[in-house]
Picture 1 (cartoon, each protein chain N blue to C red):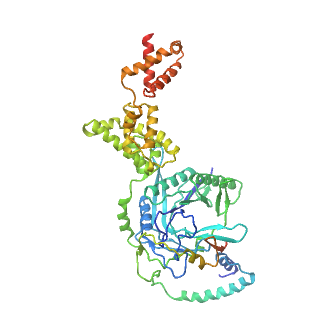
Picture 2: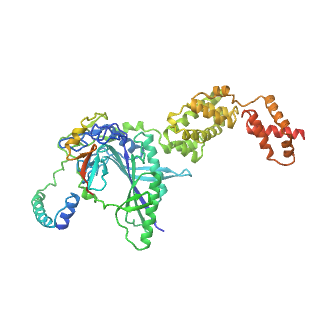
Picture 3: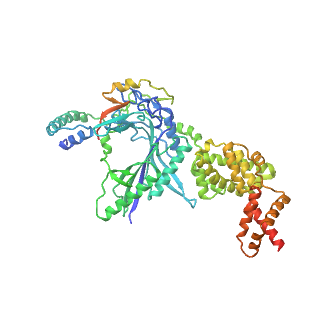
Length: 93
Length: 499
């Protein structure tokens, strides 16, 4: 059953702070979305093996050989905020 | 009395050149400048593809074999989803339901030569997270991704421990094994090996609520934290309190555990198969090929040192606690054996068997005593030592043959330690050879007896300790080339004759 507590739990896992009124709205919306997706459960999959991989490849490995990236500044510049060579982010606990 | 039950989760940082899924350097924490060993893969940039490091798989297979694990033929990776600023992709690539090694065990050697078996549930590969640095006074955090994506083995034991000391012993033994196999340096202070303990206590067969303790960065702390938890939980239950299922940290200042953020449940991680990494097949064949790289493990070596070298448990333990050291010991012993066999050519090592007990004991005493002292004093690692095993063996033989007495031997070893020269030539040049010419010894003894008339009288009148003074005089006069035991014997003989 999809209720308010589930939405609150998911908001906690996704580190999103929701207002009470948002929670009400999302509870309704989430339920509808799930009901829609649940239609998939009506399909008989008892004869179908799960698919995790589509390439058919196995044992793809590389040798343990160093290949250094040399664009440190470019990586740091790509982030919204940086400081002293470090990525600066909002702390979430 | 409550029976504690303890299980372990141990992370070991692998000693590969590169990270687990990209070709960035795996610096094992030695990179002081932040974000130098990063690339689009380990920074979690969109559109990048992880590719598995072949060596990392070999290393975990080796550890799996060493820990008597089953290696399933098939293994795959999974995504473990959670949000934290040190995790760039929003998920960690780990292994969930099909780890690389399962159902192993590690036997711990008890003092009475019996063993205690700890079962190992699983070993899997996963990537490490980055490092967070908090900024004081605001909501921001600074992140260094040098460590992100570096390879870890996670080892999970069954809850087979019932005391803190066994937990500590297991951790030490595991550290030794991964060092023997050159899988990891496993330095706990450097975070190369991290232990988490799950502790519960109960008076019945039904296990109590388990509490996880993290941030244990030394063997001593592991032991202290387990003991602390056992006591804390027992007291709480005595007071009819409820034990919470929680994660606790260790406060090394106050020597207590403290409650940490409540952990996400396993199903909250929404594990699912990693679509970007093709699975691994034929791991059994591969592990069989790796079996020949599994060298003799600490337990077996320890047992051999006990039986073959006739060493005591403590000495055998000490000498096998470091691979460099045990190799050195074996080289020295093999030099000793070669010498005995060549100077006493006889059938079937008969002479070696006759003297090996005494020789090896002398060797072990000098190694763990004077040589350790010199290594510590000079902050030298054994692998950098200047004394070759051949020269050390020669040194032991000189003592064995009484060609040098104990006090001169100390001097001799120190010169060898500092110079790397061979002991025989030092003995000659530094005039340390014990005097074995009886007439010269007599001359020294006579000289001392004549010069210390009063002391001789004291001795004759029953002041037995007076002899020590004379022994000291003889040693001083001969510059240590007449040993104390010989000097004592000679002096007493002379005095008795003159009575």
